[in-house]
Length: 238
Image 1 (cartoon, rainbow, N blue to C red):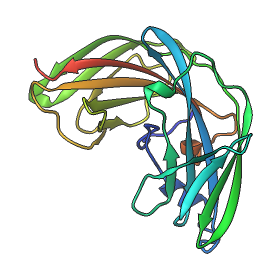
Image 2: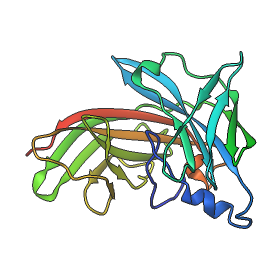
Image 3: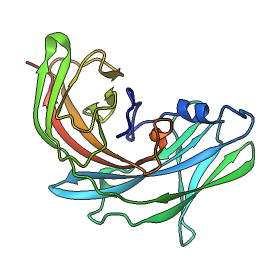
């Protein structure tokens, strides 16, 4: 298990680049880039489906980032932050399919100050069960949301997120232990982007994480292999 006390926004996730800086601060003048491919798994219309999300992380501004696929097709990534240190592509539900991805190399092409750089990611799919949410509870007086799930024991860690009905992030938890079966989203247990509004509908997600075999405490945030997502709507009212 990756024993980290705090995790930032994760795929659909979210983007942590401060760690990338920390790993490359011996020579801050050297441009470095990492390409990351993550399998997302969730239930859509009662079927387990899969899709890939793509991320390019750099320690300096990127002018552009893309992925070249076989057959001369190209996927252009979008900038995730004002500093342009992260570029990404995350699929909509329409981009999910019932077939799990195969092991494959992905070639990232990024541009920094008119110079092209490449990074290759060998993505290996490792399956993980989608968590089963048992119950969701709300306490409006303390602005807290409790979620309980069945632990299938194959996840290496968990993360809980709350989204509004526009699928915008409201809350990201710190990283949760692999043997956890419940969590309360409240002050001090994660990062709140906005407050919860009484009577509004939200989505809570429990995300089971699998990391790449070579992930460490220092670089786990760009060594995620698979994220299995369970979600349930709730109304913020007692």
